[in-house]
View 1 (tube, helix red, strand yellow):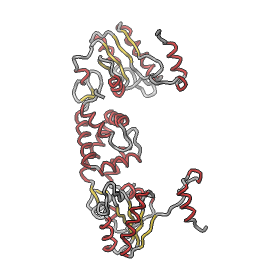
View 2: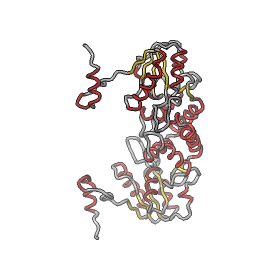
View 3: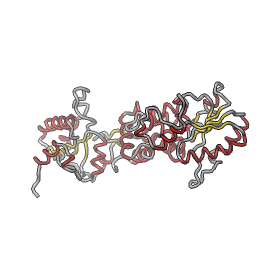
View 4: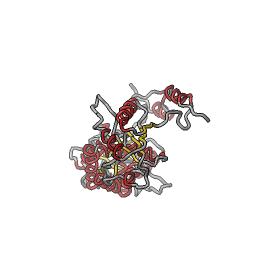
Length: 199
Length: 199
């Protein structure tokens, strides 16, 4: 790729580091931008600069926002007695896309990991316990991923919250919408069977 | 996705328009940038701004460059008697990665298309004929894609160059490196058979 000018090479190398892009697709994306400067590249430069200048972490929940307080924490119509704990901002967005939850959030920013020395403080778990005490919450919903790390973290949080007396719940386990038993793993089927519901 | 601030939504929508990215991977890429601001987002903003400010078309060959004349056209060591015609800048880069060609290029910017009203002028074919006359070229290599559009364009160019008396050649057809006959299409095998070479 010695032909592209150094600056374009540098841009391709940076783009290639984004998840979902490799060197080849980054090259294609950059060429596409260069071909469509007015409709793709210039707006992208502006949007990226604006976001880089304005995006920050919400000081209450950890969501990404362009203000000190994210739109959800600032929304007075949101239920204040109920809090949903998620691993990451992408999970918060996924919950919001699904709709149905009208309370507020708490973003951990990851899961506990002894190997990567991610302890409870890094994940803002002490802050979560404080929030539960200060905001007088009724219920905390643990919407963590159904992975070993997510579940270890969920257990740790449930233990940390026990002294506060708040109700702690977790997302239901079962067959996903459109799921076919033949394609599901045994763990999911077993969990769905154990949590079977009366019709 | 109503949760993300408007500016982030706008950035995701722009990223999703790049080839190889969709709404989902664009969202992941933007979140990744926001998480790694110092090592991903800030350098990307800078690189993109620099490229947007400096990148332009080489006035001779149509390659992308940060100068009026691209590094290949400016390189005095490049052979001047031989010219390689490619459809797009990405093809020029592919030729350079392959190595082996030490002459200069002419980028068409596409293929002839009556439907999309892309005529010879849009593809800079008259300029190519002029270059052949003015630069006193010995040979023009047509390195166009082996598609119907590429081949139609190649024939048109060969016809246009006929009055100049320059030698016109095209890339060889045959079995690609590592190619297995069982997996190759009939057209490739037939072309390789017709162009078989004495060992």
